[in-house]
Length: 410
Image (cartoon, rainbow, N blue to C red):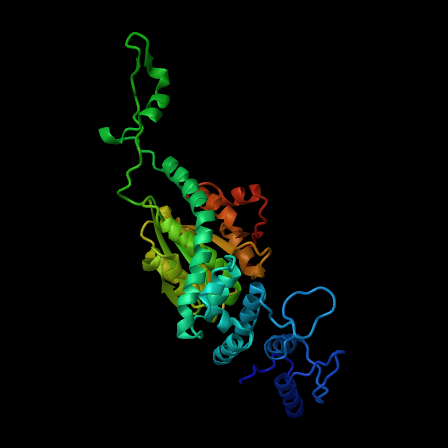
């Protein structure tokens, strides 16, 4: 197994040998004493490495706990714990080592046996964390387990669709109706109810009728009114957000009055728009983990835009840029300057305050890009406001959402 190099400070050769032996052997005894004989104390990132390895190989508890830790707890059957551990190892270890750890996790933590028994999974409550875990493991799980994994993810998706699809459709349809009023309608496009209300002042008592001076028609659906791009960060910390965004992308794609694309990225960019008819296909097209190149993702989104003033780009990311940050900020400013509505969501889930790059978030906010974390229940209102041309920042503040404070770089 390849162990990462220490970040800082540099260690002498003997110290580095002890460090590696300590990480390979484990060593925390029942009373916190080194049981491996190295006498090596770990801190910082090395302590995180040790905790991640101990959770898998020593049965040590992983994640938040109250009171005294109990040996043998490990990751247990908690989906949030497993998802958190997977995100941690992706952050700490090289890709090749992550695959080894994930394969060991399938064998040692009982995940494999669970996946191979569809009748057991039928009783599992739909859970976003579980879906995220299965998405993370799909490339290393046994072939026979993949069908079961899709069944579980389908169950999660169906539950989310039942809860979230109608509010999103209703909110956006109302916005589209207001945005698409046609004041030069053909005869079969006239909205007589609105036309009468609009022309009550021209009522003719002698004829006992309204003489319309201005006709109001239904919006013409032959042309999409808004182009929406959901741009999703695939890094491990965004796993739950990707699940929700995949579902919302599928719902948006079902609305003929908007054109929807879903783009996912790490250091590469993949356009999953052709899979939007089935959100499970979208989720299984995601490759959770890896690096982050927001600049490359925004460049691709920029290439898709044909009608800037009718386009909305929703970037869902913690904004930790692993690529060219300066160019990424320039590109974001170009999008805003061209008339595109850009919204940055630091998270799209119910997990509370996310970790994110505060400096980049403040710079985005200073450009006029509303930047905040959003719960799934708030997403319909967010999109309705954006489509209707409303002030998203004002809407968010009215919902009690804390926005990133703007600050342009000097």
